[in-house]
Length: 106
Image (cartoon, rainbow, N blue to C red; front, side):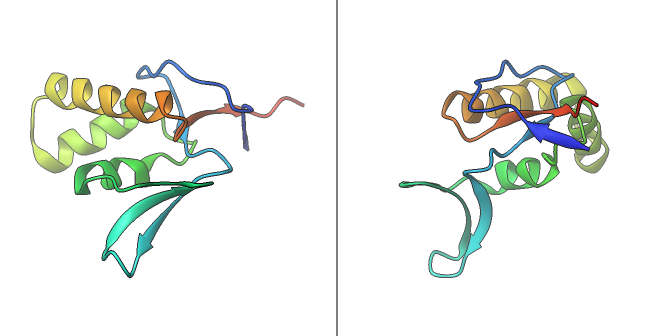
């Protein structure tokens, strides 16, 4: 089971387990005909690759797992995909659209 850290900015690494914070959600917007991240008074329209990555950010997978899935799917060099994924996730984290899931303590 995972829980969110409260409004804490994260430094994304391959060990991170990213997840959208409670105040944000990824949703397909019928009006815009595209995926958006909805947050209070903010809307972000990520591109198709970002949406694919965000759909993998479930708080269970770490960034290394996400990179490995994308490497297998796109048959691209791991270093290239890894650099791009970490940079994109860090940018979203810096903007408050991503946080770190952590194991629940007993």
